[in-house]
Length: 276
Image (tube, rainbow, N blue to C red; front, side, top):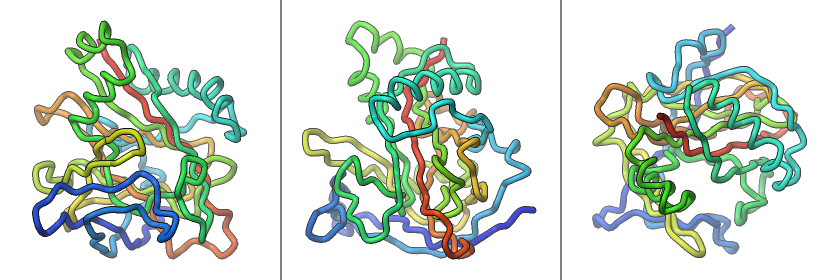
């Protein structure tokens, strides 16, 4: 039984003076919020529950894809263990789903919702209440140069490559603060996406903020379990219109969440995905 819901989504309004939008990766310890020069644009959105029809959504069509496969690694308490145990099985999973030839996972984020706590460091990440895309074209190409050797990168960049996130709940079903995904077919790539500088303590990245568009079609899979996963396309080097290039996404507060539901815990891996 599908159960569509509504959520209050935070889109972005770019700076009115035309300056380049930016925000810091870590929150300001005084305000509890990232430092940025743009404002949120809040809209109430209807989100369709695709449980039971999730097969209709594929990476190259919608920009995201759901699947079911339990992870062998289940503790997610130690980053070294995650890299040693969860990365290899996840590489295998992404290869089987996509048909890719080589995959490099370059980082992961574990999120545990803690109301009232400041998300001001890697160990305190919480669900992101903002419509966004993790990478732009330039930051995706920069990722290849950053994580692969100068001898490998040029040849890999001549082939098809993607950045894909593998997202799954950990510990229990994600009833609280689920993940919403926007069907790429409803996105106006030229008008809806705004490059935003992401300022780290030691470097700069770039993401896409997303401007509100009433045509956006939002989906979620209610009560995803740790045995289920979502693949989220953040970038695709095929840009001729034949495949989905990306999918905007956000965490959101579902007003239908039962009182006392365990707080959301999840992990996402970010992978460079290469094809022959």
